[in-house]
Image 1 (spheres, rainbow, N blue to C red):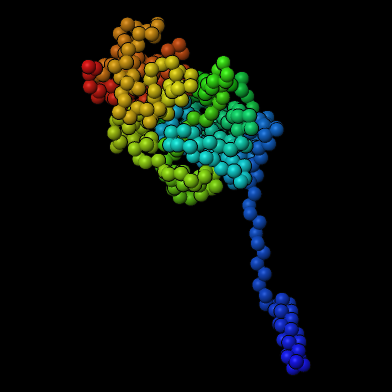
Image 2 (cartoon, one colour; image 1 turned 90 degrees about the vertical axis):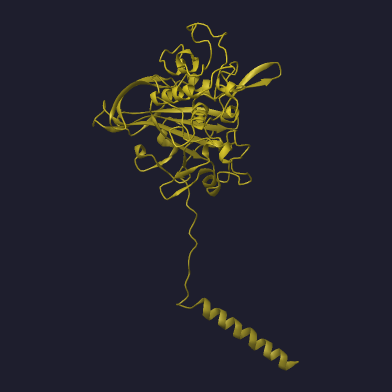
Length: 382
């Protein structure tokens, strides 16, 4: 027994010596664990909307460069809403540890409390600024989700392009620019007031014996994000990128090509797909159930226009629309744009008649040309 005890004591001392020697070795390599980078973005729901856009810390460096800070993820829908030719940069941010939920291809992603959607409107090659031909950022619109629902926060940029100040009163600003750096254009661009934001973003809900309104985002439907976007470090499907960034629950099935919108400017695609994608982006947020124009017969959502020309207004009578020329007897009259209400309302700047109601003061020439091409392709009414 004594032999065994002596051997055990020796083994214990030897092991301790080895451990001590190794831990004290000058040659030992100690690699510290680097802390996870922290996003500088701050969205205090008890304090927002802040007075200045810079208070959110969404961007690195000069704010006008729109370089997103850590956690601010850029995105873009396949087809975009026309806004007097303004270009747009879109971003999404969510609090750490939260993510969006996929409800269906056709419903906007359900973003968590604390999430923010950021959209900056700007023009390139502006002529009525100094220096001539520079980029001018006009406004940055935010939608912020509080526990009580979404709120709007609009920020108007100063002339020096160094700051944007909270302003939901609405205003106009004159812009002169060269589209594609060649075609001279101008607009009295409308920076919306809060009530104009509400028109496009409201959804009515029945509460007991009366109607109330809640506000929702528009463009972040999976059907609109199901394509590759260039993030600067490479291209990736946007829905997959949201999952990778921890911004979207991965428990969903990607929309099929059949159920995904396209870029309406892509003339390699069918005319039908292009037009359906165009009206989805520009018209569907009002022309659907529980929205601003739900009393009209058209249903312009992408999923509702497949194989249903009546939802596009084809051969649909306009008998309840007052104040228009008698010739405009149908929403869309095949092969005749002059007898098509849809074409007429897209092709006017009269605020009493133009469509969409908000968001534009000039005619979208390329969009009108697309609708004309489509009208001329249709079969006559029965």
